[in-house]
Amino acid sequence: MGQPSHGGRLDGRRRGLIGWAQRRSAPGQETAAGMEAPDHWDISVESEYSRFRAYGQQLIEIHIGLRDMLADLREGFVPDAELGAHCLAFCAAVTRHHTGEDVQVFPLLAARHPDLRAFLAELERDHQIIAGLLTRAGAVGEQLSGEHTAARAARLQRELDGIAAVLETHFIGEEKRLVAVLDALDPSEGLTGLTA
Image 1 (spheres, rainbow, N blue to C red):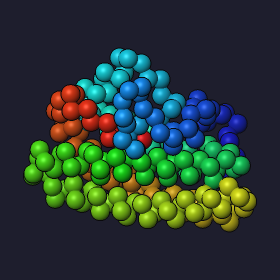
Image 2: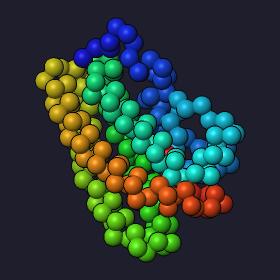
Image 3: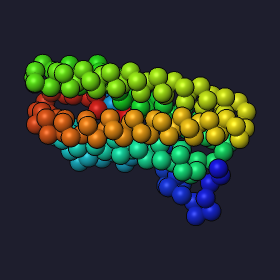
Image 4: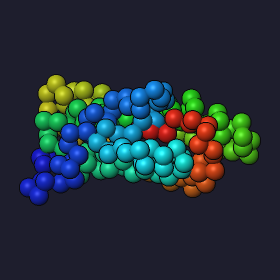
């Protein structure tokens, strides 16, 4: 499961992939855990303004980034020696993203859109299921960080396949129901819970 000879997607963002799992915030601004931008993104003043102007689009971009991280793990773009560390970084990024949604985003939406409360509760239940899947994958990732074996790598792939199926369904549902609602929020809300 080594890196493809053509370099794969990973080369363009190798520096920031593991750093993605680390907390990021703009100076003077508190960022909710799980809602930060990946370190490898080029954040300019214009993109920061756009980020706060379009929360729904930010959610889509975060989901794309998480899908890309997962695809890199599943498709062999991560070198064997780094597979465990990248798996742990991915698990941490998804966990922070979902924690930020549960703690900051969903309560705000539930207060303003009572009609979404049942759906938001379903998303929170999804987060709990996904957390269990991430815990199992993270345990295998830790084992791979210690000693890489073909059996452990195969087990990790099975865990990642399960995560991919559940996460994709979750992301699609979330995007369909919440993007327009999030885009309608006033940027002065200071909603910082939408990063990965």
